[in-house]
Amino acid sequence: MTEEEYGLFKDLIRREFGIELKGDKRLTLHTKLSHRLAILDIPTYKDYYGYIISDPSKEELSNFISHITNNETYFQREMARIAVFNGLLGDIKKNRQKKNQNRVTIVSAGCSTGEEIYTLNIMLMESGLFSWGWDVNLIGVDVSRRALRKAVNASYTKNSFRTSNGNDDFSRKYFDLEGDLYVLKKPYRSNVEFRHGNILDPSFLEGVGAVDAIFCRNVFIYMGEDAIKRIVGNFHRHLLEEGYLFIGSSESLLNKTDLFIPEYREGVIVYMKNPRRSSGE
Image 1 (cartoon, rainbow, N blue to C red):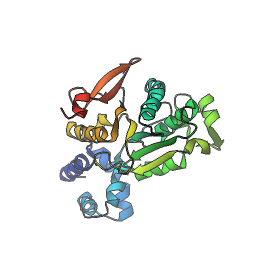
Image 2 (cartoon, rainbow, N blue to C red):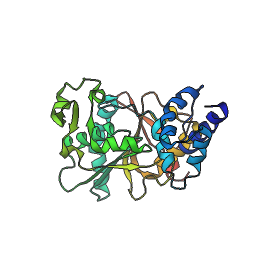
Image 3 (cartoon, one colour):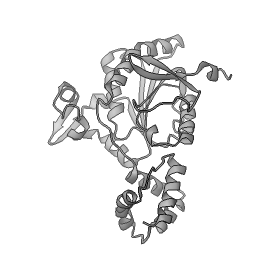
Image 4 (tube, rainbow, N blue to C red):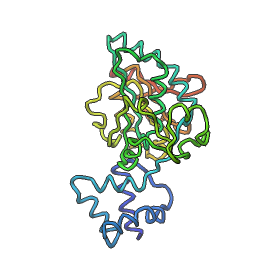
């Protein structure tokens, strides 16, 4: 991959997905894409770039990002945030009841292979708060079709249970062991939907309605500030006024936006809509 070709892909990744490639990632990109060029029988990376941008369906753009994104995730990751969210479920229910609504919607933005959204679904089901007469919806969104296929299959290796190596009450209770795979039991897949989408796109949750909580953890660390502002604006439009935004422990929105304000809950920062911005001030 030449310097010129690397520059083309670097700009494409920033433009379409908001991801900033920091440092010289030319060799990394070459390694991740060489197999794709061989499959398509395309001789050069410049030709492959032309192939991507000339495809009106954007199907190859989707294949491209699937090869280069980091789908690093696992069950029960950053459980302090999950525990705080669990403590907020009662408030979420009350907020909906005040509006005479019986619907709750949780979104995992950048859901990768689904471990986070399934963890959240298990939590909601075990809480018992939404058992009768509630329309419960959990939606995972990701740009990688390859990751989403794995999420839909809900079959995982021990690598997805790295905090316990697949040997704890959580994995035994909610998964069936089939050979070397841990397969999520069917009842815990209910209410969960996966969507292919780009969180930079304002319509990435089109038709979903108001959302009670959005999890977007360890996504912003790869993004430039302009992309973060666009994504946060999209989240702001979709969240209820009382909605919650959770990002990763190593991420912050301070000095990046005034759409959300941080609140400290049991040592964890949770972002809420800024009431001044929500009211149009």
